[in-house]
Length: 128
Image 1 (cartoon, rainbow, N blue to C red):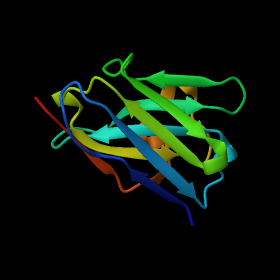
Image 2: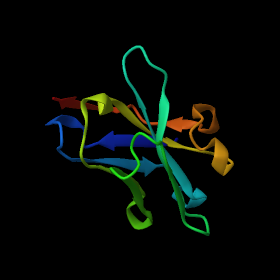
Image 3: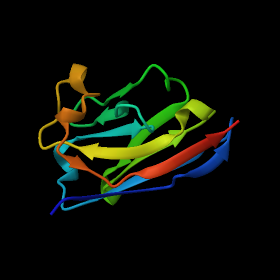
């Protein structure tokens, strides 16, 4: 049974930082790819960041978070992280990590349908 458990969310003022963690169990972390998504009330789930570490290490980010967010993973701990700096009120959302049975084509990294495994989410609230 696959379990993805996010942690690290919270409330922070604009300009602050948070680091989200996603611990995976029952999931072959060595599959080599993980994603972070977010969903604000009334909005669709959107891809935030992606890491592919199967061979050539590659990352991808939504334009809205480039230069502010960094995705990384620790294979030994079966954990993927999302470091979020310079947070803005528009970053407020529920954040989810996602795993795929088969890593998506790179251009589809931000499609929720590319992922089969999801965590329960962790809330991030940024106040102005």
